Length: 222
Image (cartoon, rainbow, N blue to C red; front, side, top):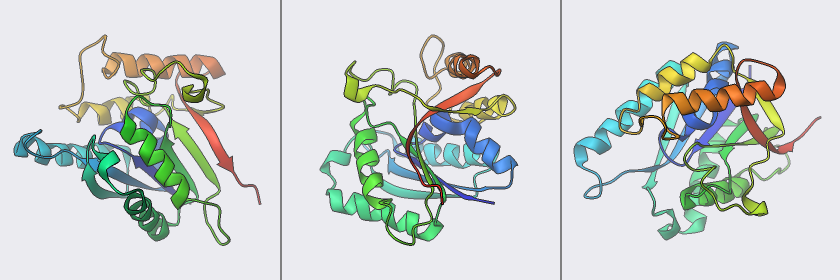
């Protein structure tokens, strides 16, 4: 059994990026933990909608088999107003409590600035210091964020790790369906059809029905 930590800038990033992989970890007995870094806030979002978003997180987490969710409650789309040290330390505290062996992060080249800032802060928090439990760090792609980034080499999502989610794709789609405030109609990339299509493309890349793809940041082999 391994401890797994998924760090998501916003609710639904965890499902879009690695929902099938999360469900696969849970099915094999791993303990999966989720850290959601930001939250919506009034008056930009109605109070009722803010409450509903948290309920959706719990519903999706139950479907995927996530053991516990941590909410850091930093302001959505305003992470650039948060002192870097504060963000680093908040993520560091979660990592310290969980002692994960595998960590999943957002891709740094995404169009959303929150994703870049979370990636940078997480890399500080998970530096390979003596005694660290972390053995693998992977970045996931997030539909409607990763593919909308600027077409620069620095931003390119070039996967080198694939996870077969043929048996958990439907679980991923069911979890995404609970995010009623976020799900869109096709051809929007945050639609169930687009999510399924991306998984099918990933699967065809490695010869299976469905897969999620990742960039390996670091793996430590003892």
